[in-house]
Length: 92
View 1 (cartoon, rainbow, N blue to C red):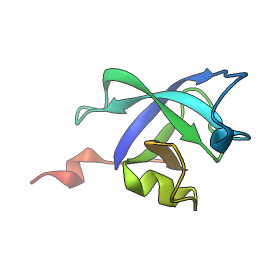
View 2: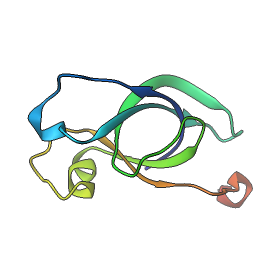
View 3: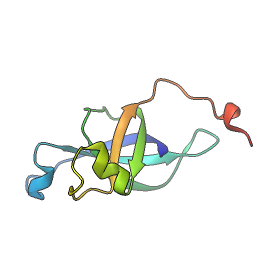
View 4: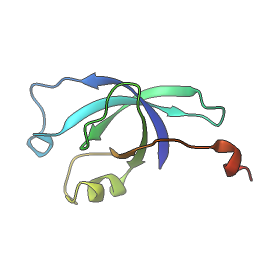
């Protein structure tokens, strides 16, 4: 799972029928210093996030199970909106 920041909405008028009714957003991972880094990835947003929100994202086969559809054509899904986090507690 990753902590990410929602960077923008993706508008798709035509998409795979398994994705009908699901929103797509672009997110960037948040690094240990709290800054966004890396590429923007497109994820399924089943909960209705807003741009700028911090979210928890899961990827791979877990993303399909998060949608309760083991046959879904998705690789990343937002699981929740994060109210706060403290990376200082995550030190090794």
